[in-house]
Amino acid sequence: MSSVKGDAVTVSGDSRPNDIREGREGLPGWTYTNAELFDLECDTLFRRHWQIVGHVNDIPETGDYLTLDLVGERALVVRDRKGNINAFHNLCRHRASRVVAGERGNCPGVITCPFHAWSYELDGRLRGAAQAATFPALDKDEWGLKPIEMEIWHGLIFVRFQEGPQPSVAELFAEHEAEVSPYLLDDMVPDGNGIYLTDPIDINWKSSRDVDNEGYHVAMAHPGLHDLYGQNYVDEAGVGDVSRSIGHFNTAPPRLWSVKNYRKMVDALDAPWSALPNSWVYMGLYPNTVVAIYPDSVIFYQDIPRGVLSSSVRGGVYRRREESRALKAARYLSGRIDNTTIEEDLMLMVWSQEAVYSSGYDGIILSDLERGVRAYHDRLRQDLPVLNDGEAPQAGTIHDRNADLLKGG
Image (tube, rainbow, N blue to C red; front, side):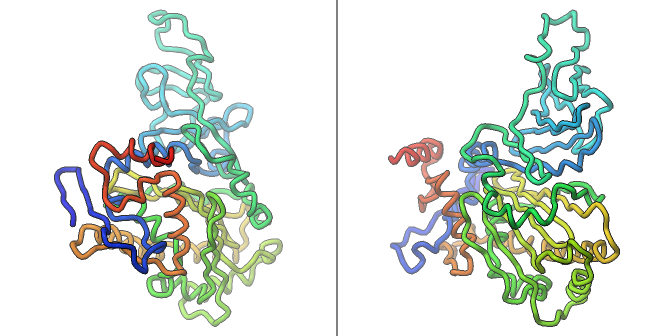
């Protein structure tokens, strides 16, 4: 049963004795609608784990910048005069305005706050305050932009807003280094369409992750992917905070136009790309990011929670710096297959979310083919053991309840 009053939503979990679903039951329904839990997720997961911002070649010139807004945090990544990439809170030290307003752009030699014209060097040092004589003496380093932890892995830029439990990005992906290296991700460039952010839909962010974390639904829900993979799609059990799924291309003749021509273009690729495996590899970085590596391109996408019942997807596509006709055509066709898949998944996310409000909803049962969902839920429970509670804890107690469980209480 569920009740709705204003923004407060509660959904009961399954209170029946353990049954054949034990170990296969997924998260209880209340965890997809509880605003107090969402606040805990923002702090525990999104602020303290690595988040992808983009690629170094999104900002190739001095003063080029990217921004990332996530659960109230605002990141600014900018290339300075020495060619270094720096990450800061997008937060003026004067009145906390954004120092840059756009999602991407260029600061011509200096970062100038649009509120009162405080200015900062591209390395973050305070350059000057407007009408500086009206302030006490301001140390240029102390009053510079506040830095954010940043790491670049194979050209991809990651930030972490607060210190968290994860090791470096390179350590997280270490097991996959040999697989990733031949794709030369460092040298890839944006496809020209920029980094996108979808309109929000009325789901909890975990409903998006649940759909994306398993391939059991591919045969039914995604005709294009099924034509590309056949039965050759595998979700592997995650190792630490990185999961891996792979779809090897189907050996049977393709039926759909996009798949047929995509396979034809991939088969026509020149060296060294012709030596890459005929497969799509998806690497998930806990809690909300996926890097997908194809013979023709690499993409990333990440869930961006807007609220407990609102979520968007942010992502980008990168191509080879020099593209043959076959490579460019293959990238166009893989994008066509991907875009169709995204549209198909959107409705599945909505249906999954709305189910928890039904009087007939008493939880789910997961297949062995949904090991990605099971592993992901288990990983969430490590950080948030309160997710094991079948019923929502009393309002106002979730933070304390989770802290007690982490201590073994």
